Structures are given as structure tokens and as C-alpha cells.
Length: 289
Length: 312
Image 1 (cartoon, rainbow over the protein chains, first blue to last red):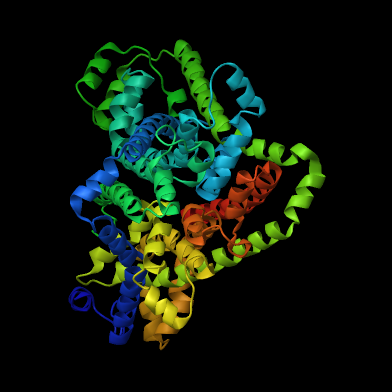
Image 2 (tube, one colour; image 1 turned 90 degrees about the horizontal axis):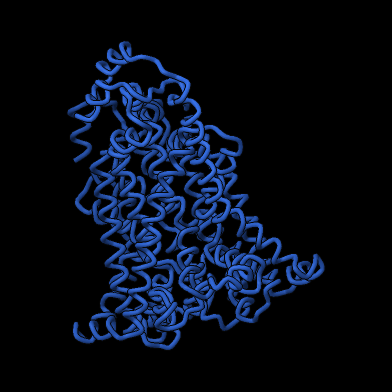
């Protein structure tokens, strides 16, 4: 099809990179399908089949048993909390990085990518080293009746570190392209900085902000490496959904693990599809568009 | 360029502000109005500056507490019992072999994902056929799947009663609780990066140069190696470094698949996990420092590549 279009629209050379030789095109297509089919589609199919193998009532029972339900609730609550914090702090960070100049800005900009590069388990170890009950800061906080590690604040902290870059990296490029003229106009017309931000900047960055926040939420739903170290994993109290799945696998309860997995998968898949759709709509550069 | 707000600031410009309240004015009109507006500089400078520095301070403090302080804390944690303890932990047979296994697995997964990733990116961007959207959706799945679930999928496929177990048994390969399982898990969780970084670059590439190469008699493979690949190299390398970073640091999927039974299937992250279980905090912190060091090297590469891609 693309070949026909190419020939209609352009004075085509005798050979063109647009038109692959038949064996090349089919070779690539088949490779892509086989690789993604084997690596992604097949594993997904088996987990869905396994989760609903004994029918929907059993699935429902697996998801709503007290431990599973508490784990799901904890994961959703902490994810919502960190998404809100990240939306605010991420936007502020991006704004400060784009609009202000200050010493150490380059370092800060690099440091923000750290959670992308550093293993999540190492993040967990770092947080325990700093806020753990036997460590300096942790001991001080403990003495003042505030437990971070092996409690819910630890989970929130770990998720905050892991997902810090998402909103920033989504908002930053948009903020850089916000028409300076509009902002200047607002200042010139006497609007305060806050009004300008609310009325001029915020509407422009809103789509990117929502995209970044959704990615952040999706990421924190599945987070395991850092949480397993800092949470303490007490069933019903600090056991998150992914760690619950891990526990069920370890205790050979494959159906229970599958049920919770399907629920988490469905949630984060919906989020990712929403993000894809939004990005496609906003930029028009999406692969699928 | 960044300091527009320092050049222009007006606290009160009565009529103009009403215009703004009715909606963002087109910039031409705003400029006109600004000519009339009285310039009133002195209070704006100080207050604007104070707000600016407060915002900067909040962000820097937040980032320091969240990122920098924990980073320094592991160095401190590793050195709690002195350099000798760190050296002893890091030269132990377990630590060395786990680091070697991690690097082997990460490099293999990166190579495999780069080759197939290039191929898939090509199909997604340059080929149009009915199944493309499905492929595009599948590519994002590893981002949506919790690593633990990824490992669990492999157990369901290759475990005792798995779908593919008869095949692997016939071939005499042990996948789960063995190295092939760890490799598959690592490939799965790092699969999207190369594709997602290469596809946009490939999409923006014009066909002219490739057509020129083909017209003057280069074959398809030569064109790919000498024209296409150099054009997408920065995006590709960016994707490769992200893949490698993710592969080195994977824990959830690998933990489930390896079963944690044998030291032979222990990667560096599993080494940390077991050390924490054994309350060997110096070992855990020391290995964490090593992994953090590797990540930082990758981060520097990524920063460099980002600058290159932005310039290009």
C-alpha cells in the first residue's frame, strides 16, 4: 500500500527505500510478530487464562480476600498520594529548571534522571540506609515518634523517588516551548506571577502534566524492587499488591497470584493506552497515528 | 532568555489587567497596551526575586532529600565498618560471580533487544499493514507489567506444568530457576526502550539519502549500514543505554524466575536481596554502591547522548 502511495505522490526513483523488496518486508514483519508474540503476547495470554481458569466467582474471591484487598487498597492509596505530590513538585521543578538560572542547575538536571538509571532495589537500600530505624536520620525521626522505614511513609518515599522524573520530563519540553510572548503579555498587562502561571502557563502544560502523572501512577502500581525493601511487608498493613503477588507465587498459589496480576495489568494497561491516546492527540507524532 | 520576568514587571496596570481577566490577549494587542502602561520597576524586582529564590530553594531541598541524601547514605552505610570490610565483601566469590552474571545477562539482553528492536521500530514506522496497531500496543506492555508479574508469566510458561515445558524438556533446556529464565526475564522488562527511542528518529528521517545510496548502486544492507544506521545512531545509543541500565538493575522478574535457590543463578541485585535477608548490611550497601556507580556511568552517557540528539 505504501508503495502505491509513494509512486503517486513523488517522482519515484527506480529503487526507493520506501519500497522494501517483498522478502525483506515479509521477513521484517514476521520477525516483529514472532518476537513480540513470543516475548509479550504469549505470556499475557497464559496469565489471563490462568487467572480466570476456575471461573469469575473464584477470580472475585481471590481479589477480595482480606489480605489481597488490603494490599490492593494500600497500593492504590499510596499511588494516588505520590501522583498528586509529583504533579505539584514535578511541575514546580520543571518550572524552576526552565525559567530560572542558579548555581547547580546542571547538576540538579542530571540528578533528576537518576531514578531512571539506578536500580530500584538500590533505591530501596539507599532509603533504608538513610531513614532506617538504626540510622542517624531514621533514629532521630523514630525518637520523635515517626517511623519511615517498614511503614507506609517508607512506601510513599520510595515511590516518590522512583517516579520523580516522570512529570518533570513530560512537562519540561512543553514549558520550554510555551510562547514567551504570551507570558510576557500577561506580565505586561499587570497579572501577578501566580495569575500568569494559572491562566497562561498551566493550560498549556496541562496535557503533558496529565500524561506525566498517569505514567507516574502506572509505574507506582507495579513497583516492587524498592518497596519490598522499605515496606516491611506485613500482610494487611504494609504489604503492597506487587509484593502480595510475589508472596502468592512463593507459596505456590498460582491462581491467587494470577487474579491479582490480571487486575494490576488491566489497570496499568488502561493507563498506558490513555497516555498513548493523549500523546497521539496532542502531538500527532505517535507511531500509531 | 530565561529571565523574561526580570525584564518586564508591572504590579498594577488597571485597565490592562481587566483585559487579561477576560481571557489571554493576542500578543500583538498586548504589546500595544504595554506601550501605554506605566513602567514601575522598583517593588517588582525585589518581590519577584524573593519568590524566585524561594521556589529554587524548595526544589533544591526537595531533590536533595529525595535523591542526594539517600545516595550519600549508602556510601556511609557501606563504609560503616571501614574499607577493609567493603573490600572483603566485594572480593567474595559470591559478589564477584554475581556481578559477572549481571553483566553477561545485561549485555546479552541489550544485544538481543537492540537487534529485534531495530527491526520492530522499522516495521512500526515504515511498514503499513493491518497488524501494526497490535504490534504497537504489544511493545508498551512491558512498561505496564509489574516486574514480578513478568517473572510469574515465565513460570507459568516454563514451570512444572507450563505450556512450553514439554518442548523445553524435549530439547533438554531448563528455563525456570536457571540462566535462560533470567535472560528471558531481563529481555522482557527492557524490551520497549530501543523501539521507543528509535521509532521517532526513524520517522523523521527523510528517504532522500537512502534513495540516493540505492540509486547509485548500493544494496539494501549497505544502505542500512552506511546511511540509515549513522542517521539514527544517537537515538539508538540512547535507547541502548536505557535498555542496559534497566537490565542491570532488574530485581522483581529475576527474583521470581531464579527461585533464589542457587548461587549460580544469583545476579547482583539478588546478591543485595539475599544480603539484606542475612542482615549483611555492609555487603548489601557495598554492592549497592557498585551498581549505583554503574548506573551513574550510564547516566553520564545518557546525558551526553541527550545533548547530542538535541543538537542534531
